[in-house]
Length: 622
Image (tube, rainbow, N blue to C red; front, side, top):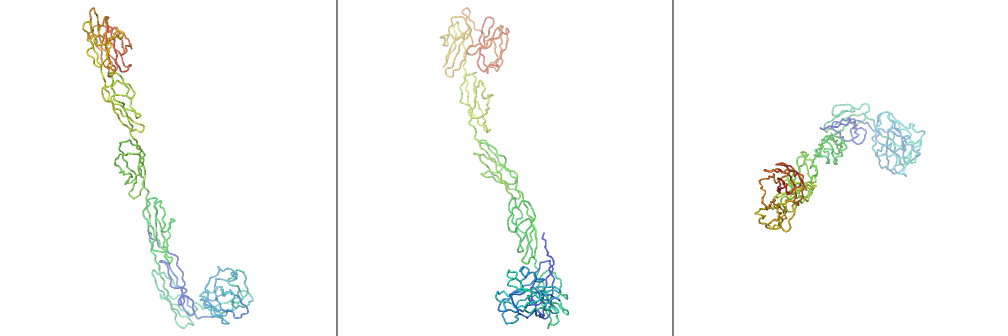
């Protein structure tokens, strides 16, 4: 909203006639055409001067110096027109005045107002000083004047007086008082004043608005002063008749009204902390509130309304306001820093704004696969066009090089410890626990390793399980193991699993009654198997019928059940591959159990004693 500023009503004295100077027999204007601000008032004063009146101050001479100060007291309101001086040579005369007496201000130049100066030519007497004094002294007031030569070697005549302030000459309208003399200018900083001294010269003045004077304004008013409040440029006229003046006097005055129309312009909306630039138009100079300087950028921190006051060349003012909206920056968030493993996709999505632009070729919310550690910058723009950045660092981690180990050839029932390498933790298929022995299957094993960064990789190993099956049969007193290819054989005595020296062929002819078995070893992979025991009795050789004893389950993960169909099991021995007796029980029952849970996976033998006979059975623990 615009606001018009008004100054108080102006009081302007308009002396109609010759506009610049007071003159006798004239309606005189003390100023030229006037300029006011819209909304201001003005008082028009008409001063009708009568004929020129002259008072001789003094012509006594007798002394001289550069200049004089003296007082004039007005009985009636008068306008001092000019002075005649008495120079002692060609010089330039300066004239000053002040309201009130001169006495006590001779050494105070700042107390005086300079009226004018003019050159004069020496004639031996009074000469007119061509300076239009034009000073009106109200009735009953004292004004002082300083008339001086500005030439340090040319003086003005004055006379010695009797007492400073004494009346030297007067008439019905003004009184001239004794004053003082001094060097130029203003005692020349010496402080020396010669007093009392009487200035030699004439005083020309005129009476203003003397009785019998009639004044008529173009508006019809007949007072000496009229108020005016023009809304546009207006010409005012006045006429006057003055006693002693030959004709009616006229003059005019134009009052121009200045109407500045100020507008506030500049930045209307910004994003914090951008600069704001405000400037006014329609006047000459501009002042802003809130410490703003016209056309000088400043940082806006909050939405605010700014007021500009424009002043034109006439000093007239107008105001306008502008509201600048300061928008906060969006709270853009690229997300927390994180890590990614080789070969994985990531998705970067900005938050806190409306649109997002990423560097490094990234598209917001579109998956991509990073290949190195990078700090990504997102630029978010909100609906106000305000922009802010944020960063997120994505650490790229290569995957570990995981190894399951080389492919293996193992013998059935032989335990193996699977150990992954290249990572920190490992997960196997087929029930394998890393670092724990297990009798492997004839299959492919896979391991997945995870490193300290959480990155993973997999590897495989193939396990081939080789199985050696040994069996024997008897014919009379001869035991035969069948055909052996790439294998080594060794016959043993089942009573204590002792080796029978020299008996390494597939055919064995025992010389003594007993129970015998053959141990067969694969020459390629080293796998070993031991056959069942066969009894040889030369008095009546008998092979224990396999159907008389039952062992299950084989293979087993824990408990075994041993059952006999026709004789009580008197004693039971668990033997390892080396013939060491691991455990002995005496169940004395047709059926018993044996728990192998405490033993590692392997191949074992059971010696079963019943009715004076012994049988050797093979079992496998997974």
